[in-house]
Length: 291
Image (cartoon, rainbow, N blue to C red; front, top):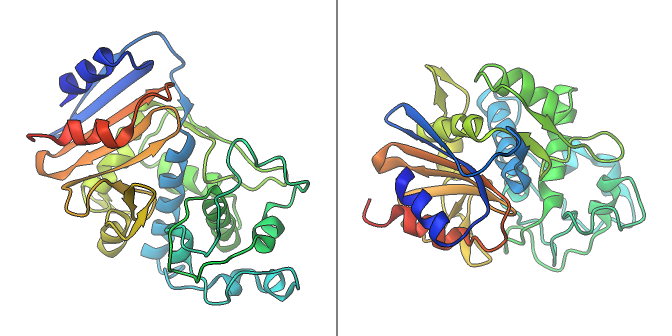
């Protein structure tokens, strides 16, 4: 698969930095050009945030049907609040909170006139019934970051550092925070292409890494399932499928970031690049074709 991916990216003149493959336990890397060893993963950050939620779920520190009102009771009392009291962690993970449009993206997150992104989320209109429609947004994963912080009394990234990144022997890493110091969660995490393989391996192996279970089988099945139509694909908990019956799933981020997991061939492939011409739906279908 690695050579197939390299040929595709070169043929289509994609500005790729590095690509890595883990197949049957053996890791191989290929560098397209000199680049920073660690780079912004953009929305691949959501897969790390979802993983933090999954770790807490596996430890029985939260449940996927826990309600937001239990974590943010004061915000729900505010007259400007438009969120349903029935909203759950599952709704946040699947972007099904009822928002009409996504927000807190790179282009708008500092344009709302407030540093308090939590209050911003609670004042956003929700014309759709909770759970009825997936509207992709950075706001939902920012809220998950804040929930992890409330449960653990650590920022999301500090929790990830202690409970995932160091145990899995990640090397260099960093993350961005909002103006009030909460890890953004939806974007802004920085990793190497090689270390991204480790997160893919965790999901490939049903939540177990080096004989230690981090995520429950129930969480993995939901995270990698086609739970909701979203844009032109299907969404689970931070991972995509192109078609409901696909034997692969993937996380992606803006400008060509990818964690691709193909269970039948025991393969994880990761990519870091900076090119808006790479359409992940087409690329991942190509990778899986004839496998």
